[in-house]
Image 1 (spheres, rainbow, N blue to C red):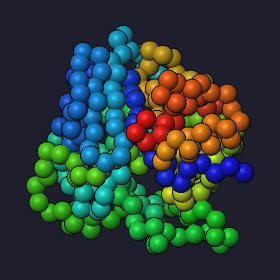
Image 2: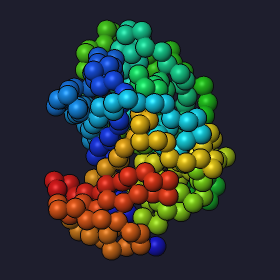
Image 3: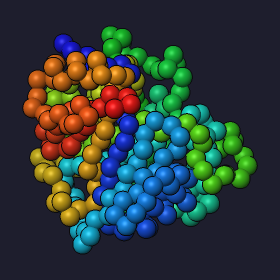
Length: 282
């Protein structure tokens, strides 16, 4: 079976938001991202690592149904525990609430939501060589245990800076899907490899990472796409290591997609989520 380029990364995520100024303020002031570009209809923010966030203004927005598919969270990977602790302190100092925290074995993570209630994870990976493996040696063992927040915060005891740690980027995107088996099969058909399974959830990746995509149906089993007027995820763009990797994907994917003028491949997953694959530098 075709394996997708192990150098794959998440190059950009596009979100539609109901109040662009409020969202820009949140991602810049609370999260600590740097505003790179802005006009009345969109903004682009980043942190110097792999992965940019594009925000699109959505007029006359309405909330998505609870059981709708779409975004579960965008996950911001920090370069180390101290960088994560600094972000935790920045968010807390801004008075923004957290919604949860966990030790996943492969990583330490905290959870919150943006002004539209769109999910966010902030996390730092443990060294890959320390990740626990199942008995058959395939994939990784992911757990959900209490996070030792005091120990984490001890790695950065000072006052947080205005900007997130250099090198922070989008490590993974977690989706709400209507059928986990169907959606996992789709991504495996693109060459992603399943790394872990939990009840009603699957985690797939390239290059042996614990996951670039999470897929769950905890709230969305049998659900449908949210209305276009609902704030939420509009696009996930993956970067591949070069044109050869992009061509190999286009030839091997076995799904209908469109090629753009720059060669990028765009397609949709079984729930209609838009995906874009491009070569680095394209």
